[in-house]
Length: 215
Ligand SMILES: O=C(O)C(=O)C[C@H](O)[C@H](O)COP(=O)(O)O
Image 1: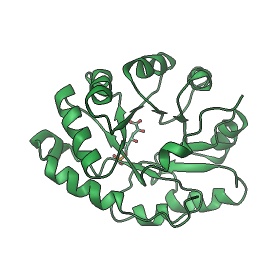
Image 2 (image 1 turned 90 degrees about the vertical axis):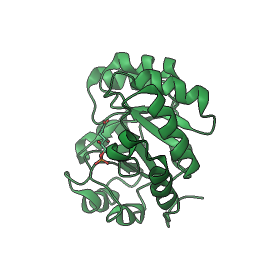
Image 3 (image 1 turned 180 degrees about the horizontal axis):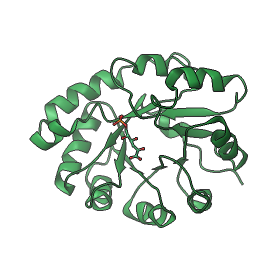
């Protein structure tokens, strides 16, 4: 049986904002700003206490958002995230137990990898769209170019160290569907409630071209 395909989700926007929510209320306002700016996919990292509740609130109150869970590092978080309303799951890396849970998940998953071996193993399990993390630290666009030859069927959502200065290079690569990043929702803007700034940053990100995007 094939696994749910994340490509359809990633088709919706070139950038997946990686957000860390200080509160449920801020998470909802942040989601509204990102959607208003044209970025409907939102990865809420499970790094803060209100994250799961924020996912539920965004799912209920921001109908145009497609909210997912990030920092899914343990198998029990798969079920909890989906129960909260997450429509996709993202991990920075993988363990055996996490992969077993991902393989059963009814929503698209972007499992994290950092090397050719990890990518090959994930592909053998049926995952064809992977998060490359931490993208800039493990070789960035140069690594992705090198992987395209021997691993032509894999597609990536690189994340980690991507910002306005290098995002264009990533999005120009044929094996990159979209990128993840926190630069569109800086902590200082979230903490200051500067939603206008987040709308502005999102608009710029939403307009980035993806020259090789399929269809
Ligand atoms: O929390 C996770 O699951 C992660 O994998 C980490 C995030 O993807 C990065 O923190 C985003 O990277 P920056 O855009 O450089 O801030």
